[in-house]
Image 1 (cartoon, rainbow, N blue to C red):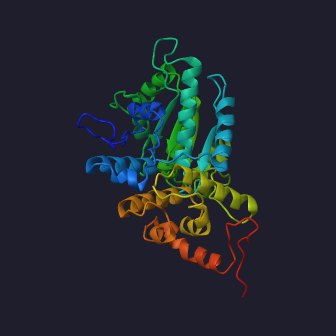
Image 2 (image 1 turned 60 degrees about the vertical axis):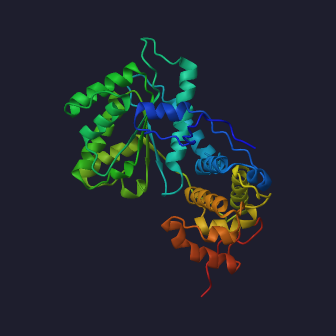
Image 3 (image 1 turned 135 degrees about the vertical axis):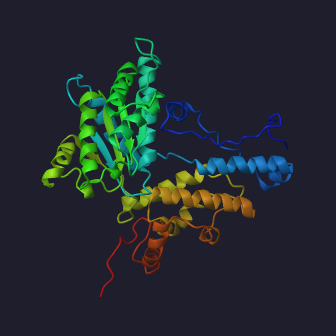
Length: 376
């Protein structure tokens, strides 16, 4: 048995691009859907040449590393709220458009969720309005940028220009004018600003940045979608801040907070959603010895290993599949997954959750016990 001839060149299925550049964003938006590798039996794999087997395993590694996004109830609900906010922002240019903030714990998959929404929105707008504007410019419905720990106003403006492929020379005002021209000519409708938690209250630079974001919402006819960790807890969206932070309170008046929550198993609905998620992931796994219920049978164990955080679960599954291929086991079981390291936060909470499950205080089975406090 032989894999398709590639003319002696095998680049693999990796797709490397920078989403903060228009070329990279377009590659993500319009890249073809990945094709799930054929699930071969052990006998079929034994009939492959060494090179073809290496290529087959390489294709499985790329596939398992890029599972999803999976349309979980959390993701569907978030996309519904985002679409309502964005689609209702049809105000004329003299009116500011309300923003949205996706504020959630690390490892929930919020950046993946917002990018999935933005990709769909980009495609819909191009389908509805055409690839070019009335004046013949490329239509760019979405801009995606990241804040960093030292992002200043000029740096933010430069990031916007850099996304469009425009020159980044000049002062902050020059860059802002250049960015406005690009937004208007390419009819951009949404700005995704990731890692907005770097906009920390209590610093004069943060107040200036909040002032600038207010400026963007006034001047740019776009919906600003912020993504961050613990933003609400930092006080950015709350009233009652100190006088020097009053501007941040105004920022909150224009911003609708949204969130993504980890999976919970405190009730039957949460337990059902967790088990449905595992069944969905299981269908996507390409291992020779995969069997129905392979992951659901590990539902308690996988919850303890990941605390119900989607990103932690997907990282654990990805690495476990790689180990299953390389070890020749070609299936996932507790003994194999136990050898796989996961992120620090998940591992830190693992012992307490495992103890609760073993004590019968917690279960992913429908009708099982909810999380209970230990008695004195």
